[in-house]
Image 1: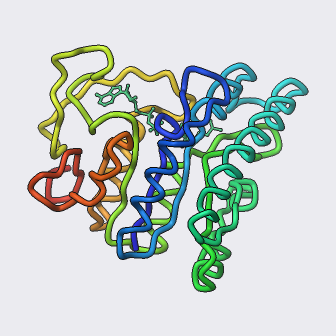
Image 2: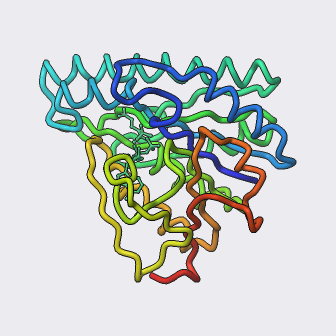
Amino acid sequence: MIIVKLGGSIITDKNKYKTFRLNETENIIKQLININDDFIIVHGGGSFGHIMAKKYKLPGKLSEKSLNGYTIVHNDMLELSIKISNLLLKYNINNIGIPVSSIIYNNKKNYNIFKKYFSMNIMPLSYGDVYLKNQNCLGIYSGDNIVYDLSRIFKPEKVIFISDVDGIYDKNPKKYSNAKLLKIVNKNNNFKSDNNDVTGGIMGKYKIMKKISKLGIKTYLINGFYPQRLNLIDNNEFIGTVVWSNAGD
Ligand code: ADP
Ligand code: IPE
């Protein structure tokens, strides 16, 4: 099994509120179904999640305003998820959307339903979303965190994060033309990240990739604008970043 995270940066234009990248997302899905393996997809929020979350100060204390934001962000995420669900259906992949609010309650997580659906050949489709952290606090659980939880449960052979950059660089490649791609990240690699996300950006992603790799699972970051690279994983021509436990701490 492979667990795939479709990053908000590739499935949406992160700078324009609710701009879905239909062609790019469809191309990735087409490539995924050609891989001869089961997969589970988790997706991020991009401009369906982060923009309104920031505006309504989420995650944060429960108030009338933040509760408004909670509903808006959840509904926007649902809208995005339905687009992805319909694309999957177009390629005959039956799926069921499972929001974070039905996984986490009162600090307890329950992923049993994922196993059930998966065993029935219905792909559980989850995504970063808002949830009630406790009586006073509204949280946001990122798609990357869900990927980590699912990796512990399903022990997939591979976890692939798909984003809008070739991999992890020593500094933000969108700002620095001399940024260098780090093919393998280990404890000797120091990279810089600037983050504009409510869920931690590339640094947060790297920390989660490292945690997943410690489960003994090879973890990749690749550029979704070139979905054919999905077929090059573990091949000499592979372009992307691999994080795995042998690579250091
Ligand atoms: P996603 O939305 O795909 O989950 P993020 O937006 O969290 O991913 O992270 C990807 C973004 O991180 C890229 O678009 C890139 O501009 C930015 N970034 C900042 N620093 C780096 C870095 N050192 N290496 C790669 N990307 C970086
Ligand atoms: C964030 O999920 C979801 C919300 C902001 C509601 P992610 O953190 O997984 O989203 P991306 O991939 O960075 O956009």
